[in-house]
Every structure is written in C-alpha cells, then in structure tokens.
Length: 167
Image (cartoon, rainbow, N blue to C red; front, side):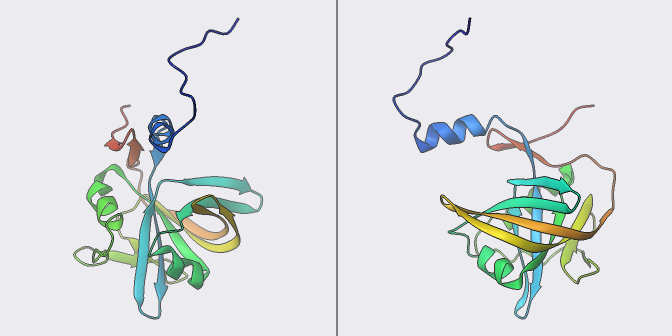
C-alpha cells in the first residue's frame, strides 16, 4: 500500500515546481562559441548525455536568453565541464551583460571554441535538432571531439546552491 506524504497542492505552481526540481543535484557546464563579434557563452545546468552511438548530448536554453541566439546561429559550440573551483566563473557566466571572457586564461578546442584552460573536460558539438518546449529550447547536438583535461571534482548545483561532493 502506498502512503501519501506531505500536503498535495491543488495545482503545481512555478515556485513549487522549482523547489521540487531543486532537490535534484546537477552538474554545471559552460556552453561557448566563437562568433564574428567575439566569444560568447553561457552557464547551463540542464545538460545530459543522450547517446553513445552516435555520441549525442542535450541541453536546454531559455528562450529569454540573450546569449543563446548567438550560439544557435553559430550552429556549433563547446561544452566545458566545470570543477568545484569554478563557482565564481559559473556565476559570471550566469550574469546578464557581464564581460565573461576577461581576467582568466582561456584555451581553444580543435574547432576554435573558447574553453576554460582549467576545466575538467570539453566536447566540440554541432547542433542536430532543436525542439521548442515550453519556455525553453531543447537542443540535441552531436559531439565529434573532446578530451578529459583534469581529474578534479565537478561543480554541483542543488537546492539553489553550489555543493561539494564528499568522498
């Protein structure tokens, strides 16, 4: 027999939905590309692997993002896996209008996308399909190159805060 837990609201409002999903821990990545006007990038925590054969990833980008249209137009991007030391960098890439690419060392992927020189790993990706879903775009992309670059612990986000993993 199943037990009912907690109070059941009449409907699921946005705040309750965010609070419930916030209990799920996620990693954090940067999505970056090089445009004719310079590098652009954004922090993403709605990122996952989709397939090993072929290698596919998925991410969600908010329709209100001012950065996503430039990345979408480029059609290609890098995904950088962030480590626990990248909390400040993640906050910077989550701040609208911030000068995101100054004040630190950047490397380039084989496709020429900017990536943090001290990230945990990276993938070069090309957009395969975009689905309009609610207030976001669900992006599936093929990953054709990548590398592990560090063995540190990942940056983890849960319940509105960055968290540390304990061994």
